[in-house]
Image 1 (tube, rainbow, N blue to C red):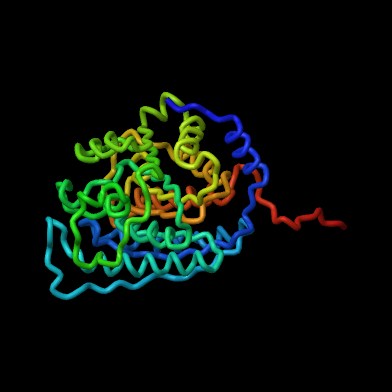
Image 2: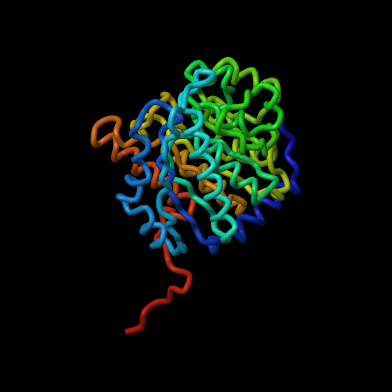
Length: 337
C-alpha cells in the first residue's frame, strides 16, 4: 500500500500550475517491424503524417521539428539465436534509433518517436538515458514486455525490450549478436506499468520478484485513473527530480478504439481514459521522451485502420495540450473593428 507524502503532492500541483509547452517537439519515424511478425507496422509513421499529425501539433501553437523517418537495412546472413529471428538487424536498427533520440534531446527538444513495433523502445529509452542518466519509465501497454530471450515463447523482441534495459535482469539476459553496444541503463524501481492485462508467467515472476509498480485494468477500474497516476508518480518519481520517458503502445486501448494492432487484448482503456492519462502525465512537465508504437495500418478494415490511426493521433494531441476548449495562441487578442 502506498503512503502519500503531502509535500510531494503539493509539488505536483505546483508543476501543474506552471506547466509550460514552450519546449520544441522533435518528431521522427522509426518504421521498424522486425521485432514481431506483422510487417505492416512499419507504415505507421507515414499513416500518422497522412492525418496531418505534424501540422495539427503546429496549429496547437507548438514549434514542431520533423526529423523525417530513419531508413533501416537488413544485415546479411542474420541467423536466428535463442528463437529470435534477425537479431543483428534488430540490434543495428536499435543503435540508429538510440543515436537519433540522443541527437534530438541534445537539441533541447522533447523527442516523439513514431513506431514501428515496441522493440524500438530498447533504443529510445537507451538514447534518452544517455542524456538523462536518471529516468523514470511509464509503460502504458496491455503487456509488460519484460520477457527475456530465454523466457519468451514467441521469440519476438517487441515483448522483451525492458529486460535488455534493466540492470537487475542482466544475469538472465544472454548476449545477442548486434546488441554489443547496448548497456543496461534503468532499474526495476524506475518502471511503472499502466493498463496491463496480458502477462506471461515469467513476466509475472519478474514483476513480483522485483516489486515493479504495476497497475492492471482491474486496478484502474477499482481506484480510478487519477489515483493510479498519483500512485505511479509517488512510486517512481516522488520528488519529480527525474525526467520521464512515456512509452505508449496503442494496444493499451481497448480494440473497440484501436483494432488495427498486432496483439489486441480486450477490456482495455477507453480512448478518453488514455487521453486523460497522458494529459495528467504531461502536467508533471517532466516528460522529455515519448514512444507511440504498434499501430498497424495493414490490419483490419479501412474503418478499423482509420479508427486506430485517429486514436493514436488524439493521444498525442491530448498530451500536448488539446482540450475540449478552443486552443488560442499565447499572443491572441480580440480584433478591433
